[in-house]
Picture (cartoon, rainbow, N blue to C red):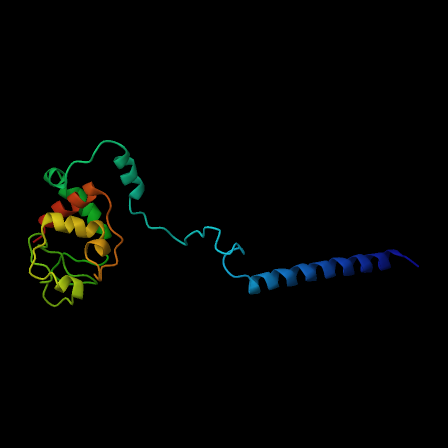
Length: 176
């Protein structure tokens, strides 16, 4: 009555039913679970990608002694290092006199705000049209564009390193 073939068929049927039950349970969980992993928002979700802004370096620098004021940093800034920092800006800004996603930055240090001809500035920047781009307010703007000028079209997260900002401004001062 119980030969090898009957036992094999019975065992195969049980394993197949168990596999089908597990697959249906998995499909049901994936269809009806809200959030990540069913933690109802309690679990931290990892981002798909991260952009290195140098915050870790700044935190290490802040842990030490007090940072020098910006005028001191600007006086000792390295324009060639600023050219390297400018690579982060080059995806939106140009130095050849033509506008890209952002306005061209030729001679921006000392230029009146909102005056690059042909570029359509945000209302926030046009409200400050008459002011001059000094090294200090460029530094404030590129440190945190949305915090410095709420309503700006600039979608850059900011350049947290004071030395990088000073080097970048020293480089921009050489472009006319």
